[in-house]
Amino acid sequence: MLTKEEIYTNLLKVPEFKNLPPSQIEWMATKGTISVHPDGEQLFKLGDPMNELRILFKGRINLYMEQGGNLYYFDVVEPFEISGRLPYSRMKGAGAIGVAVEEAISYRLHSDYFHELITTNYELAEVLVHAMTDRVREFTKFQQQNDKMMALGKLSAGLAHELNNPSAAVVRGAQELKKHLANLPEHFKGVIRIRATEVIVDGVNDLLFSKINATQPALSLMEKTKKEDVMLQWLEDNEIQEGYMMAETLSDFGFNRDDMEGLAKMLRPEDKNAVVDWLFQVLTTERLVHDIEEAARRINTLVSSIKSYTHMDQAPAKEPADIREGLQSTLTLLNHKIKRNRVQVTLHFADNLPKPKIYVSSMNQVWMNIIDNALDALEGKDDARLEITTERDREFIVVTVTDNGPGIPKEIQDKIFDAFYTTKPVGKGTGLGLEIVRQILRRHDGEVKVRSVPGQTSFEVCFPL
Image (cartoon, rainbow, N blue to C red; front, side):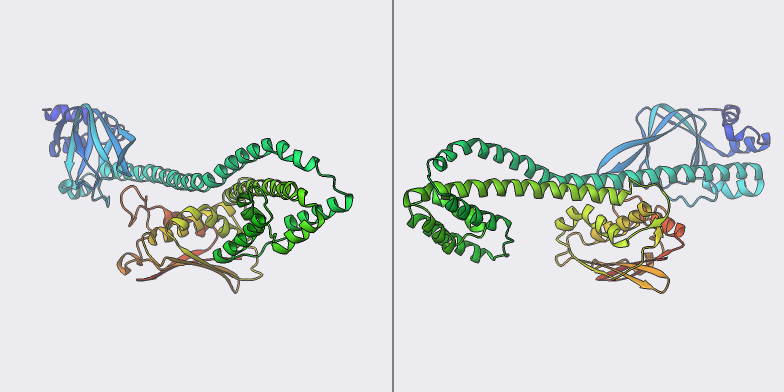
């Protein structure tokens, strides 16, 4: 164990203490205690009471955060760094997990001595207050970065989920199309053998393209099945080979019994098989291309939403923007969460809403944080509903996001905009989301209000035009 003189000598090595009066260093050496921690010992865990100022004399202390049940290294306490609780600090518990590396020797001053420290050691108190300010600034920067990484992680996970289906559909459709096209020459042989007049060829083509270009009405499952059955019956009655494979496709493109009868009248009986088969091959190609196009369009929509959300093509300056586009882009990026929680989304967008001058990317972060929180509140709810409204109130734009989740207890409604305050489980939130919302809105001379009762929570965002 260290003597008082050795403690004094070590305290002099603390950079912040280099200009302190010797008497104040001596006071610290007298009042403090020394602890020795073997390699690998856990000094404290998340939430442990933190009632001591600590200065490491030897070794290192690795700091870890817990997220999703896993530990992540994020910082280290080096020799002669000030840590632990400081005078005037509101710290109650440890914000991380501390583990000794090698043998660690630390100086500890209990908070019971803080009053005496403040009243009799003014220079020391001033140094420690500056240290606390620097620590809060650094920790805030870390938490903000962590919050951005968590938001990026959520965004990435959502995009991966949303992109998976259309990208898989493109690959699957391309493979099917390749296989289908490989078989076309064999089917084409039957068409070549037909000796059809130009009138017949034009008649078949006109019928085919009229169906391809037509918009088919939406049908119920029962109506769709009935149409397919009628088509299958005609194909069987006319002894069309493999008609059971053709019925669904022909029916989906709007072919009915009258169309097929009209087609049959144009053809010789021995040509019906070849022509109907050729129609089926063309329609199958059309369907596969359409499916690939739709999947690719979905991917393009997602990419456009990302560009709109991040505003990656634009400089970070205020510019007129359509609020609806930002809200729609945010909903697109959170669609995986909306579908997973089976949330019914209702939008009430005011007509002819002016385009306010805003920092587009920053304002999209406001929508993301508020809507994402609302969706979290709806997790596990049977009748989950989310409502978003926009309106003009004199010279202001008002956007309201309302969910029918459990609500926010009245006693904490004033705290939810404070930095580091979160109601989410450890690892699920940093407590900076709504603080960032408030900061962004202040840059826009705006504000955010919350109204909440069980079953209805509304966040109202208001900013000038």
